Image (tube, rainbow, N blue to C red; front, side, top):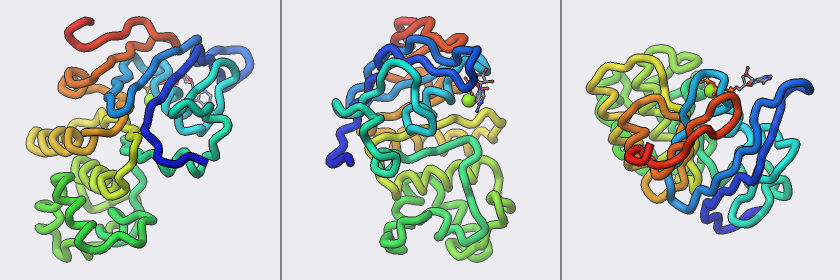
Length: 230
Ligand code: ATP
Ligand code: MG
């Protein structure tokens, strides 16, 4: 198992296919240094989510190797790997329960103050305080009752509380009002600071601040660099 994870990730000639006859990811190599933000961009089906799936060992690559802090991830248990990670996904998992429980999500030791602190960092506190029962407001299944943007803010609050070394973010494509979008961007900036972050990016603002942009096409890295270089 891993201890004191720094969050340096390397893909070395990684190839992967979900099915026998087609290669989804071909010969992908990159190094993400500790604290860097990597943006994954490219058209639908290019392999962005697949790279995230391999990184979190949702699947294992058939050839090449993936390393975390110099350990091949195949030798690291999924449990200990995922303890170092938090996920903010397009459809982040919200369950039927209070806002407080949804932010806490398994971190039962977190105090109410820590939950509120995380919500403030995530720019979620102000909308929560306007709800009828604030942090005790019960969400319906899948977060029914709050907007798409508010769901994002909640899942950011959950990730802030989790305090992971590695952050995995699949940016929403759905349209979110401008004010909420700004709140999300600001909160993500705070969340990503000092963490190795992998972002499936759709928004230009996100791509601009990446340390490395990997442009994927049909499972290969077509181009790489910073926004200014590309
Ligand atoms: P999008 O922008 O639409 O999310 P993506 O870049 O994330 O696209 P992937 O989800 O990584 O693309 O998919 C890459 C390829 O692998 C696609 O051709 C897709 O159909 C295929 N694929 C994805 N998941 C599976 C799966 N579980 N089983 C079989 N094929 C899959
Ligand atoms: Mg995807």
